[in-house]
Figure (cartoon, rainbow, N blue to C red):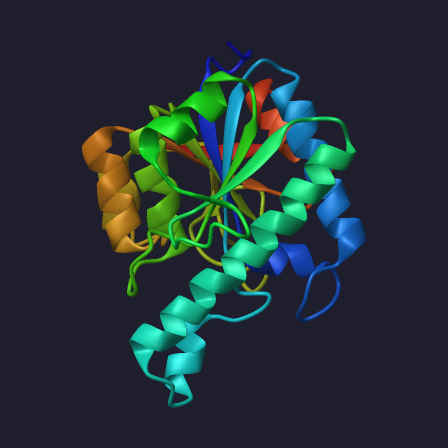
Length: 238
């Protein structure tokens, strides 16, 4: 158990975070930095799953807004998450930690197909599991995937990595009077329309009583700090 009291967590990492300073693509130095943070987090004794988005390569909703069929666009976005997961897996294993990518979309020549019991065994064996391919269905975000996998894996929290150090009453980049919250209840966050996650993901977390911990991935060692109880973050529903 970590200092924060967690034995198993799911980290939700946006695809955009992997592009570093670039507007698109995968920046290897950035991936290596996040991989090092995940390996250090694993060293605290927690079992760790990661759900990564695909927005640095392709965002389904954006492609659909430009005329692509929404179902096909979402599938393309899910395939982007597989590439990101494989990049993270490779970086983690170069650091000497075991990792495994599992995809909700079957592609056995590339990675394992997601199966709940097999994925739990990987976690039990100490591997960092990269959950790719979203839920395997269109119209669902990777935020929803993160909460769904947390429920299926018996995780005690979802760690949502963002560009800011918690949840604010408004966008702190544009509103200097924005207030930062240390803790929020699910109903309070929903009532104030704070946009912690999309409604489907948020409702699922509330129903399963899985706290969402919002923190900035831009800080070095951010995941490890949150698990040690020293990182700056907002706990929603905990």
